[in-house]
Image 1: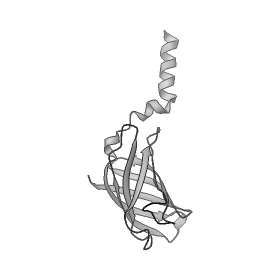
Image 2: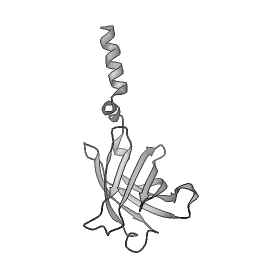
Image 3: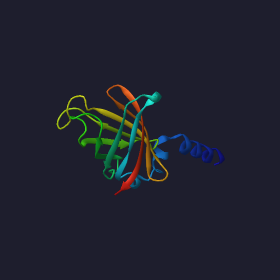
Image 4: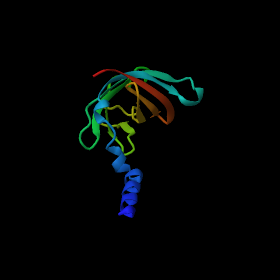
Length: 138
């Protein structure tokens, strides 16, 4: 019995799916605003408005992202989709095609922080940006 208990504890600690159950998915949905700044002190930045829908039971969600300094084609709200990964991080993408003009594709790797914040990185056109968003509404 002693070995069974130790084995079960090790399974729970090492299994990423088990730890994903601790993520409070309901905290993700809402409206956020913030800024993306080019890494390495680069000159490019943009203010952003992000709206995320309530995640489904499997962690997938939809929303929209507006990068205000992204140029005329990409500065309007663009449809995004994503998911909460097993480690609790958030992966979100704006995929090309349909309602998204060519060149507006983006990928976001984020973590839900305390104080209703999302932070992480974004890739716009091959450049990496640090991203910090604060929740501003539901």
